Image 1: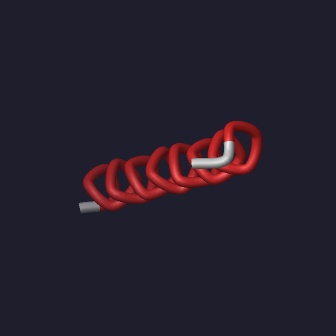
Image 2: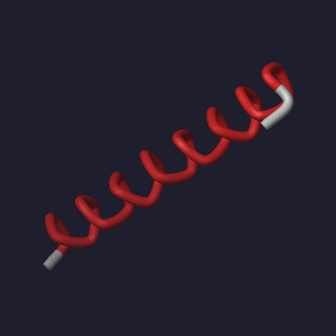
Length: 31
């Protein structure tokens, strides 16, 4: 159970990083 929770947390972190990256790219390129 703990391992699965860590996996979910890691997935959430990756999603957050991707969303932040998209936000930065949008500002840079004016999407």
